[in-house]
Length: 45
Image (tube, rainbow, N blue to C red):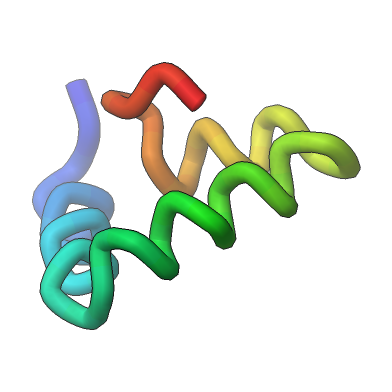
């Protein structure tokens, strides 16, 4: 189960700009798949 801090970070990323957040996850996934999961684990990127 993710921590409250982790969930808060996900929520904030979506508030900033969900479209740009998806682009960030996609760009990180190529070089660091685990990093992409930490950014947005609930999206099937």
